Length: 326
Ligand code: SIN
Image (cartoon, rainbow, N blue to C red):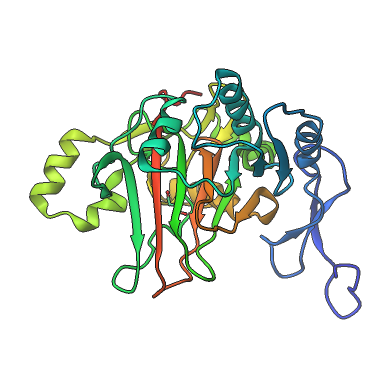
């Protein structure tokens, strides 16, 4: 496409991919922010993942660096410590892992989740009435899906969840996919100038941006007392992998505290837009009893809201993490 310049001005601007080879990326004439060309920095991680071996399941990757389907493991059973350790390792490697045909009861769902840590009770989303740790996303003709924006879950908490396990109870005939974006790849792909600019910056996160809309003034005041504005580094280091990742999202991040409003808005926009890079994403097509387990620091997710007025019912258990740090 970009070779065909005879009727157009030539492509302008050139830069190396942030890391790795594969040639130059170039931006399209008249569109300063539209770049084409290889994202060479993904190669190393893709190769690393391809060389990993697994004893308790087989692995089919969904995309270059993010997402894999795990087959041959039964989440309804009580798994050995070895199997759980390997699931955790796969989660850290692939950032989000998927399982098919797992008819989990609510008790089996929470029992599996508890193998990875204490479970969170969400103060704003209704739960499965029998099991308070299971958030229930129940969509139908009366209530459509509002989770169609890129986000990490609950970054408005001082200690956001480390991961979440989502079980499909009822799925629409078409649509309702969930997409995941790799925030390590997003960080690694930033230009050296932007990396330098965001080093040491802090972001303010706020539940009010989304959940505030359904609260009256009294409830807002009460919830603000319980959940003050949370501050996390813009770039955090994953506590298990030690690698740096981008940790801001449009749902919950208000601003970058060290910058004035205009600069914060411009920089946050650029950082949040990284999740839109298709090469950093995978997309999961749900079936009844599919399960997704995502690393809530390593990925942002986006639930496609294209199925209204169809029914989509999902249940999520979230595992409490540790405070994010640079
Ligand atoms: C969520 O945003 O946690 C829900 C994801 C989904 O329903 O696919």
